[in-house]
Image (cartoon, rainbow, N blue to C red; front, side, top):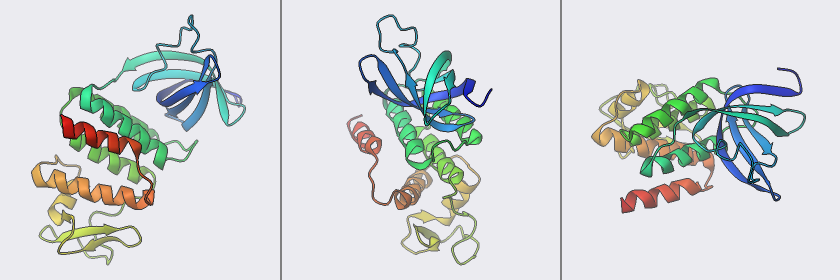
Length: 233
């Protein structure tokens, strides 16, 4: 790799949109360079060999010129397809939006990249979808430095499995008799144990509070779509 080019970088397409008559602008999540904007010239032409390659949820190896904020795609090779189906597909788009909303551009997180790929594999099995999303949300918060210590509250007191807790953006984890999550569920989250029954419901509410606190009221489009899909399935 030189200063002006990147070769065969593992990557996923998070989003694409049309650009002029024959090209596409891609939001690409790379392993070693984080999220980058890439221009795929001529990819919408009828004879383009890349039209069927640059798809979401497919692991690619891409090469691009890196002379400005907007990279120029020079090559893309298909490696593996992780495309989930039905409800899991919309969960995948939710994961993509989470990455775009929380990660800074050009800020690599190789461990989160690996976790993203593993989550796609889990979504493809169509099992434990809710648990997969909860631990991915937690992973995003941890990678961005927004996670809280799940073993102690804001006063430094150890989490008691018999108590209930809440999250406040400016304070952190607080003991609250009417809190959204039990100490027992926090302990399960902390060790990334299987989430079942009430623990899964509580984890969803708790992580939603954390995410919303950092989103500062800005809605996530994929979340609304996902809620509708769950309602009608």
